[in-house]
View 1 (cartoon, rainbow, N blue to C red):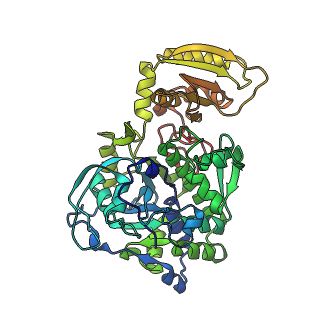
View 2: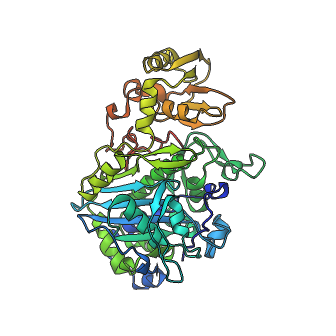
View 3: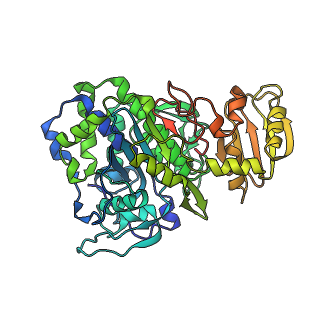
Length: 486
């Protein structure tokens, strides 16, 4: 069983909670596509009480919707992997997966944990129901009732209220399951713009510690895979949004790995065993046969037709607000069983508007080794309303990745600038102002990469291309692309 976390998770400690385990629930759905099942796996599966589901639910529509929740429960083997230390398990990661009725497309929508939402009445352990809560953090729904197993039904009620979509099934995955499933698949390819040390994973360590991830592409499994999707400090802008993007890239890479190994019993049996041991599901998925029936809906979906997006959002202080009407347009598309075209996901739309309107001064350094790049980029920035404070070239350097650094109070400007450099690494390490140090990636496609996201060629990307500039990602996209915040 998984475990929930305490109600007081709005504080700083809660914001440091690990995230990322939810991604592997989708793996289970793909794992069981082979068309066979082992009866003893039934004994591995735990279910939660569906009596806590809302009495006023949206009606059914075309396609199927499954809510996937990641839990950092300390139960079982989770504590040794960095699971929660309190008596109440928490959930910091969730996405809603829509499998379209045509059997040829699937859309996974990530919901930021700090989103301010309305939490409808939810059932407590004593059988009573809570009152509606307005402007509550999304992930606090999982802690309602303060039990060790969490409250998946309350999170499902909240998602249905937020989206107007009926959730057909809910799946909760824990840390131990995440680690064992990545071991079973033989590791997953990930990408990092620079090395990551122990102190980045634990900011209270007091020292940088040893290198745990080297720069560039690498294969991770077990606890190291868990560390990759959990790490936030010292990578990107330190935000949970950056972590979401990295988790989406991880899941896309994981799906590719499972598909590449083929659907044969030798590969799938240990994976299915690991997966079912780590799940808590609604009664509608409470057997291998039921899981298999659902998983079969994936068998005809190509990698480039599995799309990952983030619910349209914007910062509101240290919380996240839903951007309208963009979010309602996304939910409406899924209710109509239409693959969303290009929802204005995350901060990209507002950041681009900020960039075109001018967001202050930026210093430009060319460390790419590409002659004349700094001058060309500076001219483009000026065209878009930026004031270029300085332009210089560092001789003898040939960096691969563009880096954007920002100082106190400049995060919004950095996000606006990052909209013009979709593959840049963003970090809040400067003492003041905003600067961009250009790598070779800034020169590889200067036209599309310096245009608004909607103008980028190949957005939505099939055929192993780059992640889309509008915040979407396909399962066959380059694992190093589209990680501006992480």
